[in-house]
Length: 360
Image: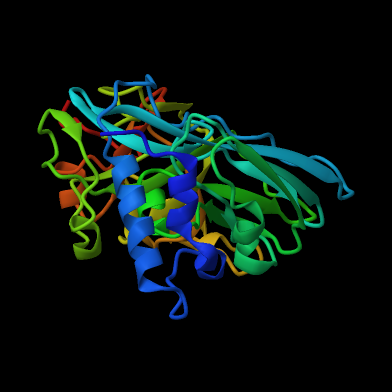
């Protein structure tokens, strides 16, 4: 199959494409333009390629330091669209679209009142146009219209982070559901002026679905299935881009010591399924619903819904050792489709809280 060129891609978006940004089709846009864009995107996604990335799973500990200042400032951020081929699990390859080569894309962390100076790059080797929609941004398309860029080009955008919270950002070109499903989403954290309470650890996770032409575990290259996506029938539901990536059988669990506290930043890219986010053997000690830092927090929550295009922020404590499994409590997604990450707590037992052998 010939490689899609930039001219074909831009023709696929069409003159009316900018009006349809945020991925929703405009009634005024010609149907042929929409169909051409879909076919162009699908063709680019389904080219059979050699593996170009060892992993796409973001390191959950790769979290920017908490904000430690009293005044707003300008913060420079660079995001780069990277189209890569990697393994979903051993023997199964997939063509991902990513921000900076990882799923989810890098966490952006600023303070309320900061100005974000974004540089958005679309390297020459890519096949498709991309952009960024920040839910933390006042402006058309959350910046999507201003950042739409063809391969080989760069755009810049500045916006002020005027409201605090944790918010998703994602690609929002036409066929945005396909781009997000392929990995193009991340989180921007806008801390309140007073900052966030101190914890011992911070972790960053993202859940999304992969719609492919094969069943989970079937070896070989999986192409994107445009028919399965609107039916909401994914082959995989994963955390950080790969099946069981953050477990002992993957890249290893997150680790803490008993007595530690941790804050988890969690984003659901979707594009379709709501996560029932639950820590097996633990609870969310304090929960910021829908990533809001100004609403009242909730205490000792077992499971929280996180809809597509939404985040949650929650803290945990670890009084006893053992594996805490972070899952979507729609459990077939865990058992059949790969949706689980693990935090391993190490330290002394506390039989007053948990005694696995009371008779002994």
